[in-house]
Amino acid sequence: MNRHIDFYKTLQVHHDAGQDIIDAAYRCLSKIYHPDVNKSPMAVERMKDINVAYGVVGDSRKRKEYHVEWMRNNAVKPMTSSILNRDKQQQPERDPIKEAKKLEEEATRVLDDFFCETVNERWETAYQKLTRIDNENIPMDDFLEWKRAVSQVYKLGNYKITYFRKYVNCDYAGVVYPTIFQFSVGLTEMQIATGQITEENTQKYVAYDGNGWRVCLGYTDLKPTILKFKYLAQVMPKLDKEEYFMKAITKIDLLTGLYSLGGFVEQAEREMLRSQRYGNPLSLAIVTIKPNLEAEANPDENQLDACISYVSEILCGNIRKTDLIGRCNPSSFAVLFTETKLEEAENALEKLLELCDTEGYLNYQIYSACVSVYRGSMEQIIASTLEKTTVREKESDINWNEQKEHLHTKLGKYKLSDILGFNKKGKNHF
Image (tube, rainbow, N blue to C red; front, side, top):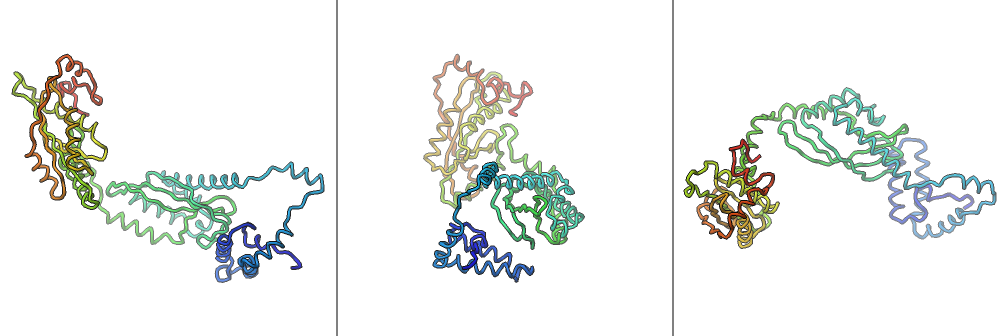
């Protein structure tokens, strides 16, 4: 060749690039400069150069011959001029990694500002952060109407931005940008009608459009989307806050803070379905507390509440996080041991009951039963297990002096003396 042409530079690849990189670069450049896509007169000539370069570098045999010539023409030559050497030493060396990191941080900051303005419903400011082509395609009035329509259906609560990748000379929405960063954004939203919280991920792009970094919206017409969200806002049921609150509160036992019977059954039946799906064992235990009021001359009507409150603290503090516990009637607890065989559940229950054993300051008897659960109505299973409960004998080897010391120990955030005086001091479990 009379005049050396740098085919690597034409394809925008390194001279040591692998064949897969060269192939990918050729495909990317073809999408940008192919005459069917790019109507510029210069695109035809540019595409010819790209085809010639790929015809040589893309062929392993031709590339070996060409690479020898490339090395001969691009070998590093020593500088003979002391002035040039001095100028070169005075110029700071560029760090491509730091420069790329700086660009990524700038793009991330712009996208973060865009979502911050969106969360605070400063939509006019958010609109100013869109690319020039987005501003031309979407009038501000349409953008504001779109955001208002969405806000009638969803409320954006939080977001998390994660860098994904960088594109060079990339076509987005019909425009070729020199640099585009792609981000994955995790959104936490609340559905206005139901109060339901949802999490989803979306992809967002930030492009350098000549004057600075701008967020790519990518829409050419927002009117169909506006109509869709307006329709959703009309047809979706409105949230009755009082009804929603009452449904939630009926699933919680007010004394202990545990699940009520209804709340426990709802959660337990989900675990039962999961157990059937994966073939895992499931066991149910019932613990019933009966205060010994007959032996006292002046029985305390709040004794049962004190005993239930005391035992619930022990059970909650010692069961696994994966197990379920609820109050299935005024004097009984239901404990669902997930992924646990009956024998293992009985051993776990025995350890829990040992912790619940007490005498003197809270005088009660413990009844218990444990069964395997396969299928059926959880409410009926609880009822049949309640009938199988038997009394647990307690060992009376604790002297009263040791018991008196326990009165001043704390169980959770309460002393046992507080529990004994349940409701007498105007306190409750909360």
